[in-house]
Image (cartoon, rainbow, N blue to C red; front, side):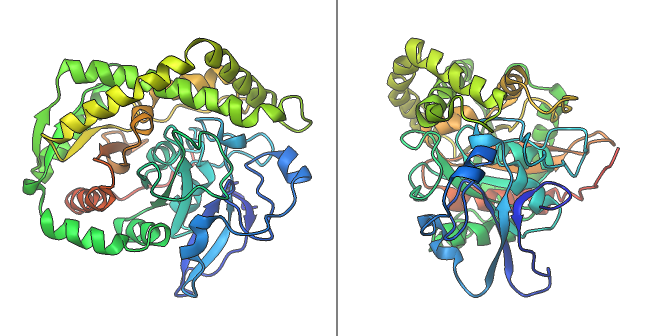
Amino acid sequence: MTRDHAFISYWPVPGDSGKTRLAVKDVIDMKGKVTTAGSQYLAKNSPPARQDAALLRGARRPDVAIVGKTNLTEFALGTTGANEFYGTPINPLDRHRIPGGSSSGSAVAVANDEADVAFGSDTAGSVRVPAACCGILGLKTTFGLIPLKGVFPLSPKYLDTIGPMATDVHNLAKGMELLDAGFSTRYETAKAVQPSAKQITIGRLYVPGTDSKIEQAIDDVLRSCRFRVVRLGDDFRDQWGRAQSNGSTIAITDGWLSDRQYLGKPGVSLTTQATILLGQLQYDTAYKGALKARRTWRRELRRVFDKVDYIALPTLKSLPPHKLLFERSAIFEARVLGLQNTVAVNFAGNPAIAIPIPYPDRHFPVTSLQLIGPNFSEGGLVNAARLITEKAPLALEKHSR
């Protein structure tokens, strides 16, 4: 394990080896390795995987070196990125703030240049939130695009996705090609169809409770890039809020359905067990209603995408919160879930990308813009990220306050 706690297992290669250094979240099976899902119990009681997860097929090539299995919140059931057993990955921008979860190790590995690309899983924001906290790019893919066979499940029927993380668009696109052969062609097509921001219409969504300085930072970037921006109305904002709530209900409940067999097991943290039990309460009260609302929400998003190319809003409502003096609590995890503007995307299944942009604070100089696209628009989203990062380049400073 590295000193920054990014990895559970680490096999480094030099950065100048000529190979793409790939870090893999430890919910993804690798032949001959135990998939711990960040859990001491699984580390001690699970056999090594008999074969790779299906999504690693593209990564098994001579020019790619897998450098390790990355740390995460236990069972991917958390928002802060904390892990009591393996140590919480240290946010390279501010060691006192959360790294974001659950793919915390993947984000930290990339941000600290221990990997060029990292794979993470995203059920309610677990790629985009750590990307936002650590000042990197993170892409949540369309539900069903990347196969989940051999991935430790949280909500495989409704929400689970896999996506790449990187510090720059070039490596993000490279990571996406490893996951989805042929992506590079679709990306080049998107660059040809939308070569400049002037060809792109952005639907701007303002979410109540978001830091006004973050909203302003996003408006400034969209304006400087010269996108065509259309403000989305109050009715859509209200539907977004309901989708956030319904998506959270499904994520929490499916956590119970997937992980209830670990209740009472030695080595499973009390916070994780409390989170699992919360899902049982949701199952009895709100789960069926949330599932019924999915069709309406998907239809509403399709209606919006008839008028705009992408939807823009902050990835998080605030800067990453400061860590607790102790590692985790279910209440703090729930608080951070409430700061995420990400869950409604998983609820619909659409792709979305978190893009670091400048923030006017000398102590924490970055925030995150989230762009959401129609299903299977990953090429267009990465192209839009290219346009934004070229216009508003971000030199991230590492802080050790």
